[in-house]
Image 1 (cartoon, rainbow, N blue to C red):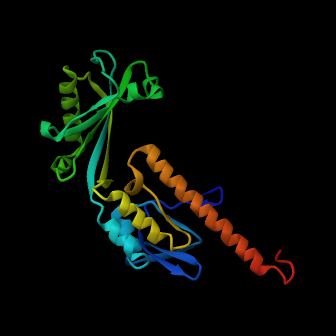
Image 2 (cartoon, rainbow, N blue to C red):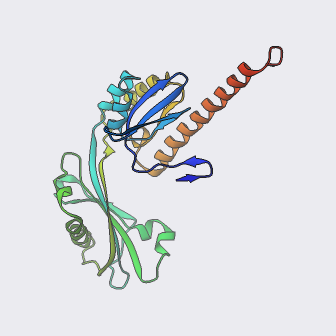
Image 3 (cartoon, rainbow, N blue to C red):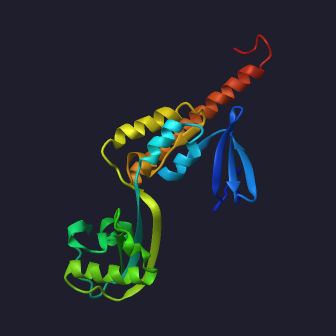
Amino acid sequence: MRVRGALLRTGAVVRGLERVGDRWRLVVGSAADPVALEADAVVLATPATPTSRLLTALAPGAAAALGEVETASMAVVTLAVRREGLPDLPGSGFLVPPVEGRAVKASTFSAAKWGWVGALSPELVHLRASLGRAHEETVLQRDDADLVTLAVAEIGEALGAPLPPVVDHHVQRWGGGLPQYAVGHLDRVARVRADVERLAGVEVAGAAYDGVGVPAVVASATRAARAVVEHLTSAAGVAATTAAPRGESG
């Protein structure tokens, strides 16, 4: 799909990244039918493991450091329940320590945390639950209906009263999408960025570096975007100077 001069490809697996002169080539598609796309700059906003694979030949130090980042899988269950009969929602949610032995590890009272969510409907309230801990992901083998049932039951138990009827729900699964920040993570990220810095026009971004929260991920993306703009601007300036007739390069 092309919008405002940009070509957007979704569901395209990137299998390789290689340098071609001053540009970059992405190998996209199936192994049986690969497609090569060339670009002036590339932002790798993939999780740590696939980013490590893409950088193995280009930045082995960064690839090794990213390979040390463990990840966990999780599922987020969003519920829309009737407002009538809903018990009081204390604060904006709660966390559940592993010692409790619960499937739900956290719940966010979306309607209380964000005013615009609370104002969506006078009859419905939106809540969500997170399931799946590092090294304790068996619960994620259950189907979506089971996860919804678990979420409803355990949120109700935490509130001290059953939740009203669920009008609608949505289950979003994130396989290996939650990085675990072990001791030495900041040094590891510094090593990744120092090695990638040698690759003019390549940047990394995402939750694997500075935090999993939305503000942290947005900051990471902004940093990468600014670096790419600086690279493209610099490259364009060099090209213009090189192409200028002798005596007109400024």
